[in-house]
Amino acid sequence: MLSIALTGGIGSGKSLAGEFFQELGAVVIDSDQLAREVIERGTEGFDEVLSRFGDGILNGGEIDRSKLAEIVFKDESARRDLEEIIHPKVREAALKIAARVPSDGVVINQIPLLFETKGAGRFDFVITVSADLEVRKARLNERGLKSYEIERRISAQATDSQRESIANFIIRNNGSVEELERAVAELWEREILPRVKK
Image (cartoon, rainbow, N blue to C red; front, side, top):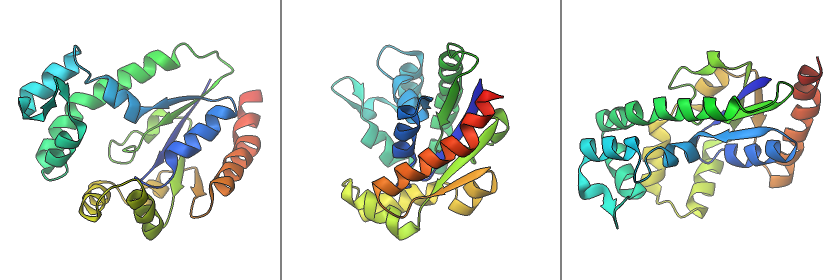
């Protein structure tokens, strides 16, 4: 089984690239999705987050992710505390999914904070999706994020050059959706399939 990490900053197009890899036949494990699941009501993660951040982050009995984000993107120690709760649980959930993939399969782990968590060594190789800062900001504006939220989230993450420093392959995504789809398909044909067929 080929184990690949797919990373990229917020607004880079990493999730869309992941969708295209999935269409080509990869099993894509979305760390952001798992991070939501491991703190859902009724989980150990939910109790741990509540115990650390208090019930002010609740809305209708569920964790309000925007309230939680407001806290952790303002306070680095709060963000570290949250990551210490979530990251091990996400890794464990990802390993369980990967264990069910056949030996000739391709698993793509979509991990935004790969550089920050020094996780690159756990994978056969790393793909980084990069986009110019202004392009990323424009995409995030379209998603409804306010400028101050965008600045906070981007500054809380590694830079593109840091993410590129751990990458075996870099996909530049400043253009259209179709261009990104072509770049993913080309990388799949040229680099991924030959490694699976070995």
